[in-house]
Length: 420
Picture 1: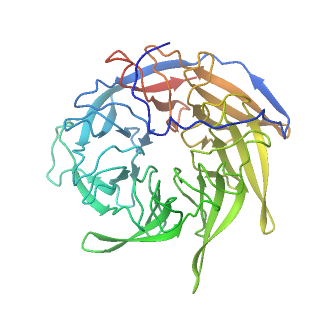
Picture 2 (picture 1 turned 30 degrees about the horizontal axis):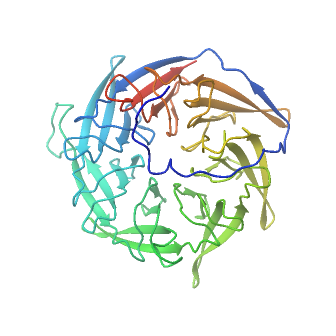
């Protein structure tokens, strides 16, 4: 497939990689028979365009997401809902960004906060043009109209200095209702525009929030943190950086809080493209009930890895490596885990047609089996999925294709469901 398309600001990076070595017993299975159903094709107009982020599901099975472009105002993106009623899906735009004080170009998805409303971040806009953290709530006046817009409140506008700029990742809540996130750039580390930050926002009463940078990266400890953060039961934070570290190919890090000394960073792993090939993690980490961390790298066809705590250190193991390529075709969205310990995710541009795929990684007899559940064709099913997945109680998977579909030159992306 050849077409002129909009290129993601993150897709321009190329990474030198070597052949991946296998550190565990791996088998690979062909694609299974899966059915993909398109739930919505974006038109590039009021409904939005380029759904780079994945989806969030509420208790009723409704889906929520963002688009990086499109919308009513200057193509600055949108937040949308797909309502599931009586077996059908109805699309509703919740908010269209203007690129001004309300923010613009949301690369990350939205999440539900403790109050049941939606929270997210935009990469640009706000009072200083450097991005925002925002909240969306339905109108306090009941309206039976599904298409009624929600009310947006900007909780913080980044200034582009020590406080950071361009938050590409979704936000994370702790049990006390504090918000954590990362910024692509800014901070007090590195020269020039900074290497990125980890921030914390605390509610200060009256609907106001206070933002504090709890860590600034300095390149040797990581750079360009694009991932969301994972919080364990002890309050420790885990994340990844795309670049920086001992070999310049990204890191996995842990942030721990100590009374009196504040937050400190610990290295869990530095990626080296020359040793095994796996490098440049775009996505965050997930925890299993035993405290193991799982993540993915974007290089070539991508690598799927596990980190296991061993005393005061962590042991790294590569569960699956795609092998070869320099186009960062691996995962761009976080993995998910089902109750049986299987891992699921999307790849950006591998698969049978080079347009991306949905995969499953199954633990079997001490090893892992990789299965391609679906390969995108670049046609009506879209292409280049950079989303995470969500799974319903029946095992159906939902996600987005960042481009493709019937509208526009190359398409504006779509939302899909995959059923076994």
